[in-house]
Structures are given as C-alpha cells and as structure tokens.
Image 1 (cartoon, rainbow, N blue to C red):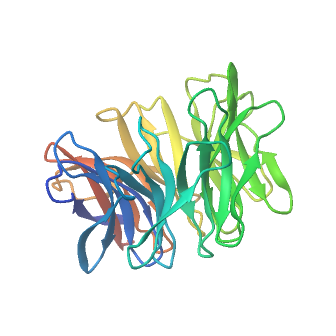
Image 2: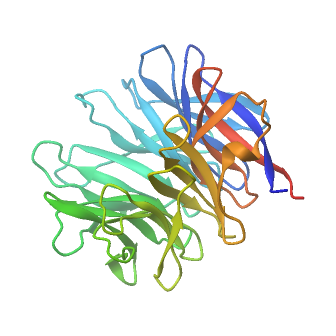
Length: 331
C-alpha cells in the first residue's frame, strides 16, 4: 500500500466561509488566507498545531491581506492594502513571530508590491510594479539592504519572484507582451538566469526551490495550452512529471529537500486534483491517499515540509477550506 495521510480541516476565520493554505514550515505552522465575512475581503492567517486560527490583520487602514510564505522562525510574509493605497493596490509585508506587521514598501517609482516567500535569514522575495503602464520587477528584500530589484532576462520587460530558499536563491518568471513566459533562477553570484523548457517547449515557470537548488514549476512541450509539471535537477535538466490519469495539464508548486513534489493536475475530478510526486512512486492523486469517507476533494497542494506534511485547498461538505495532510504510515 502507498503512504496515506490524515486530513485536518484548518477551517476559516470567524465569519468566514472559505480559506486557502499557501505554505507550511518545518515546525508545522501554516499560513494562508480566509474571508472574514461572506463575499467580504480576506485576511491572512497563521495556524499552529496547538492554537486556534490566528487573524494576522492588515496594515493600518487596510481591509485585505494574505500570507503566502512562512519561515522556520514563524515569520509570515505576504501582502496587505493600507490607508491611501486603493484600487486593489497592496504592499509587501512581513509579520514578526509575535504578529507585528511591517510594510516593506515598493521599488522606487512603483505603487504596489507583494511578497511570495521568506527564508530562515528573513530575506523576502516577491514582485513590485507600477500598476498604470509600468513594468514589474522581481525583488529580494533584507533588513540590511531593503528592497532590491532582480531585473529581467534579456528580451523581457517584467519579472516576479515566487520562492526563495535558505541560501538566498530566488525563482520566478519573466514576461513580455506577445511572448511566452520564461522561468528564472537568481543568486547573488550569478544574477538572473533562465531555466529551460521541456523538449519542444517555448514557455516555463519556476515556482518552488529547495535548499539543494532543485526547482519545480511547469513547462509546455510544444502546446502552450497544455503545460506539464516539471522538476529541474541541480544540473538544470528539466524532468517531465506528467499528469494524473484523465488530466489535461499539471503544475508543480513546491519541493522539499527529499525531492517530494506537490501540485495539481487539471482536467480531473471537479476540474483539478492535488498530487504528490516522488521519484520512487511517480505522481499520485492525493484523493486516493486519504480515507474514502473523509468528505474531502483535494484540489491543489501548495507546499510540503521536511516531515512530508502537505497543505493546500479543497472542497469539504460543499465548502472551500484549507487542508493539512499529515503522513500516517508507509506500508
């Protein structure tokens, strides 16, 4: 039998109807977002195994926030709106381990930003842009240097960062109107470098990176409408992870240091199913690895920690909720 999981419903913040989990650290702390009123704005949350769901709040005067990353020190990172910044514009933020929120601002001349990930050193990666006619740039932020642009690949105009590992390596994508996106990896030693595509492909997206420098994301292989989940090994070689039976495309979002990859495969179930992939077992539908009577349909797996715990979003009893999967055993 394959490894299987215990499902924990992370619920919602008071008054909320739906929630999403975006990241989990190696201590089992989870961050995400939940609405706080039906059809109302969402707030970032922090979940601890021994505490209720915690509303992380917003910047002063704000109505919306979300947390997309959390480091091993328990510091979430994400975005929030604030007084005087309207029209859907946000600023990248970090919350301290005690819940205090810090505005990271934007790159010079920009008016909106968002953070996608934070590492153990407190370095934050994300994107900053001028929403009216401006070009967006990926950034790395640190307490010492502030927010620094990572630039773009040659031939592109925009970039955004999606993950950062504990060595300070950043991954994301570059774009330009009329041209397929291209994934990138950045380090302080090499600067911004492209990641490749599957054979015959023209587009790629780098979404997650582990501390070994292994990268996951997606690439097409000749059909831009049907990308496959991809693992780029430490040599930069792209490996096609395939898709679930009945799927039409797939996306990988995270990889831990043991090479466990999570993501989703679309065209299955109610439109998409969450998957877990290992070199030993290949891609498996997480819905087949939980109790059949759980009431869950797991849609997207967004993150996996060193213990193999997985977080994401699914439907349970007709509601969209954040979930946590904890490995029960391997037989």
